[in-house]
Length: 279
Image (tube, rainbow, N blue to C red):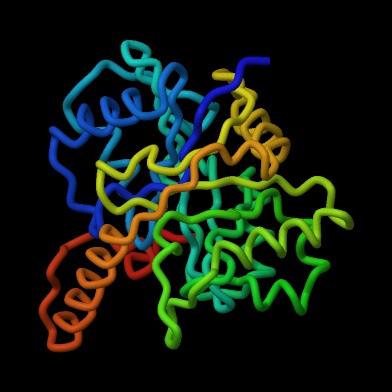
């Protein structure tokens, strides 16, 4: 089976404000860094940036999957997979392959989120498990939940930035890899991925995993799940720290949070939870 390079965790920006040039720039960056069959995940947070991205001007594109779960640009041979990073009560869970317009509700339990995600045919990834807002510590005490998980993100480019104290612990990626190695004996279905968690277009492909090329048809979401489940530590081919991008992202978040506390919103965005659009 053909292998492709996939960086499945990207946000493109700290906000969901996108401009038309972002489409071609993102596709070109993915093609240059990841080569033939390049694949990257475009991850919604508290927004619908994937849907906005799909509407930008640029290269001709086509939908992949029964529910517009991905975008394929044949001219560049690049696949963009829809995802959502869900903020559960216990921490963040990355869900890949959700259908266009599907937004899982934030701030509910991890257990309920896993059920909702599976009901919507999502692929569940434990992203940055032992970094800021990771669910690794919770999973260590509730290992049975791993049977509902598909993949552990064993390397996160932005989690490479760490401090001796505080919410950005050092060695978060090393701990994730150790955890994966330990639990995989009892949960052999678990895959492992490395990804950038980029918040800038330039970070696409800075970390990636080699996976089996999924089927670009109605079976896409199931094929994608099988592909990432089959990936292991040896398939995490590039693990590149994003120190400066991480610090830039953190500083932007601090500014956004501080401004919103005084009633000023730096970025106007959809906020599906606030609009009652979440499920």
